[in-house]
Image 1 (cartoon, helix red, strand yellow):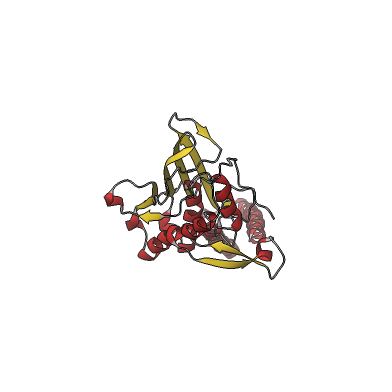
Image 2 (cartoon, helix red, strand yellow):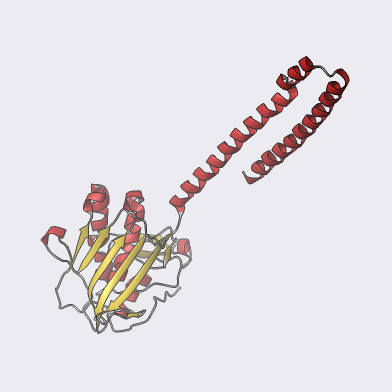
Length: 301
């Protein structure tokens, strides 16, 4: 596309040079004719006369200008459409009651059988299908088997279990005893019925820093008191995009930091084709609620 624009510009420049040369030659001829004939009538005729080849050049230039505008318009549209394929960028912030921040993991301190409640504010901004899919990201116990070779985790033909929802992943993480209670129960409450432990805000505006999702957890003595998730530009997100962002951000709301593995759901920029809750993430939950506080998830290959 760029090479076509360069050719058009060079062609226009060449035509302008030819037109200028033609004008100079014609002006010189006219001056010679005026001097030789010295006729007022001829002068009057000259001022109204325009050579056909000059008109032709102007027509060609107009066509080229219109073509260039069309080309620029096509390029602009292609850049706009490319935004749909932009990786999803996320941010996570932990803030304690004193106002300072930390990069370490933190966890909820729950009693056995205590449910974590969550609510969604801005439900009217999304369709019923999107709303249902978002709730499933938390409440679903469904899992799927993914070939390890697709994520460079093992040989082709071997598989690992990935979870669609956090309920299933947390059930798996709680199979072994941990120092703190792994959240195993989640309950959705309407935003009209009071404040929840985890609040999901849906907003139509874009984030000024380019983030698709943002999670902020308020903690006291390394224990989460409340988590707030914000998902931006919800009007433009597909079901798969909005569920991927929420699945990632809900991991932060439970206390997980980012991973160094780019193929994982909890990577700071989500680029994986399989944005589900992996065995690595389940192991990170186990370690977190067993008191192992680090700044990042380390995945074993």
